[in-house]
Image 1 (cartoon, rainbow, N blue to C red):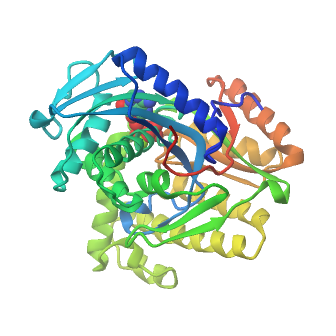
Image 2: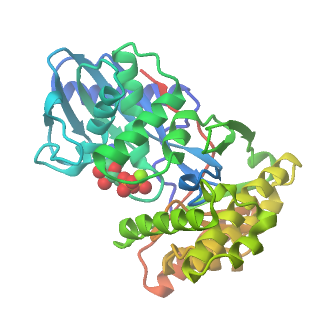
Length: 405
Ligand code: ADP
Ligand code: MG
């Protein structure tokens, strides 16, 4: 493998959490002077299967990464929010809570502050009484790599504000509030998966989530016990067309649902797919519908195989999911296709892009014995194609958001 990534937290609430929290508290003191009231952590995620289904009321199956965003925070009573990130060199961004405007300017030094500010705005928009705060942020979640650094930042912020203001929200309520902030304050039309994954995943499990009603099931996902590993390959590219294309795919899915007379594509049964496709005139909408319906089916199939104790058999399901995202949903890119092709050619059980697409990361299911070889093969394929060296690390399912200090 070409690197281990920033796996400084194990995500199980152990001593590593305490070390990371102490570091974040030190960072807080350096920026603001006094000690914080506490430190909260929330993880990034990879999605095992169920891509572009979360805004179609469908099924997803994310697992939390050991990589977390930590927020060291102290309450203020003067309606001021101060934000500082160890990763983004913008200095302290200071905002007045009463002047927070959806999609408006959030300080003059970088758009990142909109993510935590949006959480606070969303809490207030939901009627919660929330005062100001000082926040210092440190994160090991790769930013913009499709591993959901944005939701990790939002959820860690929300857990901090929840406790500082004694709101006693559930993780599901926190996920909804964070998503509302990202949708309506930051202005990114994401579904609910990332925030739910960060707030609700548990160590050693993948989260089977119905995004319509947020019904959840923690599915045991202990690959090590079966001699398997899930590798994450961060391509370290993010193609610019991603944001507009995401909105277009969403609109296409909504058009498909409207044409078929259903509330969302989740309501098109797999058994009725051919008949549904025959009723659609627009070939592009047909392809989008086929992806969403078959992808929901692949989530069910993955669950069935995991419940049957056969995790090796999910490999081909992952690869079929990639083909669908590449050919029908058209959100892959040459770098992601290269990961999947080179990993499978080198003996992986299966692989697919994960997250929104157009760059970011892919996941690869491998036997222990070939993990090294597969990682090397992917790196060689990248070098041969003239791509940047990818970052490869293992995804061991970590815990969801929690107080760590
Ligand atoms: P992803 O969620 O896949 O990492 P996004 O584009 O959704 O990618 O979110 C990345 C954005 O989230 C960054 O550009 C930045 O604005 C914000 N962000 C994430 N982590 C941090 C951090 N540690 N400090 C400041 N901003 C962050
Ligand atoms: Mg994101």
